[in-house]
Length: 446
Image 1 (cartoon, rainbow, N blue to C red):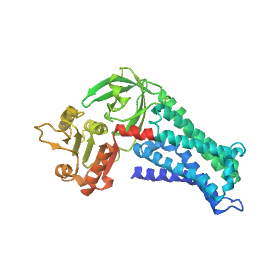
Image 2 (cartoon, rainbow, N blue to C red):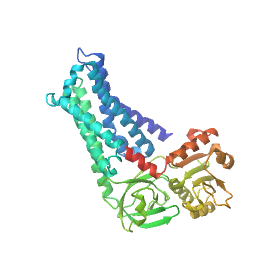
Image 3 (cartoon, rainbow, N blue to C red):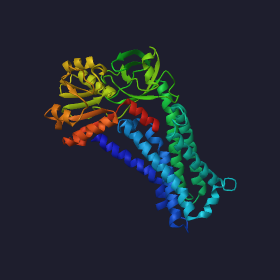
Image 4 (cartoon, one colour):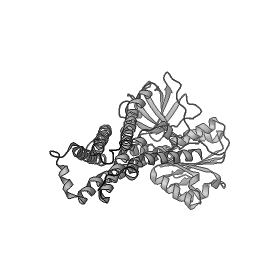
């Protein structure tokens, strides 16, 4: 309940910041002789500007938001609001041109006033940002190059848009109105400084070292880290951190992974990483002693605030990483609640942590139900996918009193959610998180 209250509070603050410039138009002194359409274009411009500026919030990974909102939700939110900001910002001049075609003369950057030139520059750069984001792969841009370009374009767009807004000087002529825009600009600038200077500098003072690289099943490696010269960090089982492996945190190259180790042993962090991409395909070759910077913890996929009732854990493939963090934590706490773990994998040989799960079944009140897509001929367990048929047969009788944690690829999560809804499991009982590769994809599209 406390986390829910915090979510509502920060959502309220977020929309106040987004709508603050619009309130200038509605509540402040209004220039005489302005038509409805001119007011509408101004409103679209104010909201578009505010949406663009406030977009730095979801991607800043602010500590006070990190344990309130799911990491995936923040980046999806950022992505979708980026679309809204683009539409409103582009609609601002288009409505103006339709309402008064004479204003098309402002597009002539050789004769137009500087405030109009700034607006044209902002729109052109915004179009460039959208094209390079949507067509990044087709344009041959590496992720790191795109991200640097994305940052530069974003700052330039906001700068030109602020210059345009303040120099049009209609609704911003009154001190309180002008102060609001300048204050928001200062907030956006502070977020940029925090993201690119303060946060990396803080991480630089708290390095970790690779002390072991463990080969697991299923082309997966566990990276074992220990703090170098500091006390480490605390996290909740199942949360996420961003790793800068072998380079400075000031460099634009970091990757999100779930903690896989026990939250009761913060002096040693473990991250299970599957070979899925350019970076992860070489993780097994990481030399012992490599410096790593850990930015975290983040996310709400954890045991925080859970009642003493049973747990139903459902994962596919490397989605077991945060689940293992939970199980290892519960084992260290000598927790005796009933736990069922439905674990889907392609084959028996690809089951990550297979042997350790057998050991955990002896330490905990745990039942592991393996579901194999391609089972061996003598397989007597569940086969296919984790669906309503499997769940209805294998779930414990008191499942409606349990909390469900689901982690894996999005199609699996959606299928499991539909199955559980068909079994009258409420959304309040369910927490879900996409697996590591999807974390990265969400981050790259942000």
